Length: 63
Ligand SMILES: [Zn+2]
Ligand SMILES: [Zn+2]
Image (cartoon, rainbow, N blue to C red; front, side, top):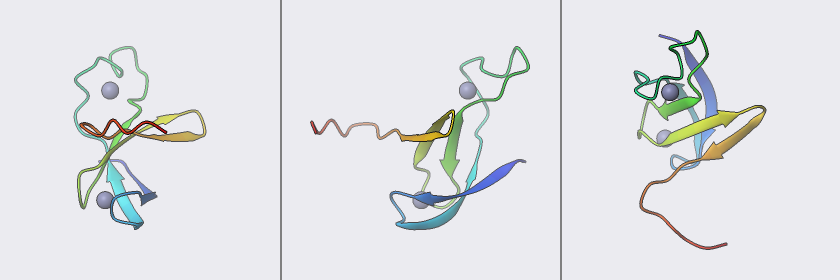
């Protein structure tokens, strides 16, 4: 399985991120699923170009 090494916002340190099985059809056309999950705590992030966007379910805190 492919994995990446990124700083995890939840762990507060570098962690390995793995791609869970894509259920949204991102890979059906040969593309790459942008969703990655921290192998340690499970925090999901999505890559968009060079930007890493944090996705946190259930946390709707206005900036
Ligand atoms: Zn996907
Ligand atoms: Zn983590």
